[in-house]
Image (tube, rainbow, N blue to C red; front, top):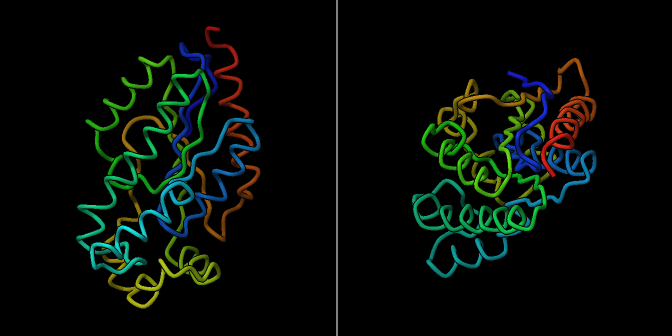
Length: 207
């Protein structure tokens, strides 16, 4: 579901670039930031050193993102840190491109309503960009980037796939980017199109 470029009632935007590991969301987020000129906040960049240190301190595996320890104790802190950085920028009138999986968040109607309302109080609109991919494309990207945090996923690929829902889509309106290796349109071209629509939409919002 790609939404149009009708003028927004808000002056700035919070753009959430979401998707599974290996979908290419970090690359898409960088392209979106470059195309719009809006600051980029990537969850991994902001929190990874602290995440790894905290997991180690709690006697966990610093590279494990599938454990209960990570999901219940560390992940909430990562997202809290990311969103606080987003809110601070919006409070200053600065639009933001935020990159993270947001897997639980974007399918939760209540989370979407709360986030949209918080954005509105800060004079911002909420835009969700879902970076879609398929299993073979994601596996190829994870293999290519050779990151320690992907070791478990690749070593237990079938189990990892069974934990995912590849037809997952955000609730409400969102922008869909097809980043399968077999996609007909290059990622850069798709992101540029969405960025152009967003810049047009918010450049005509209230000052």
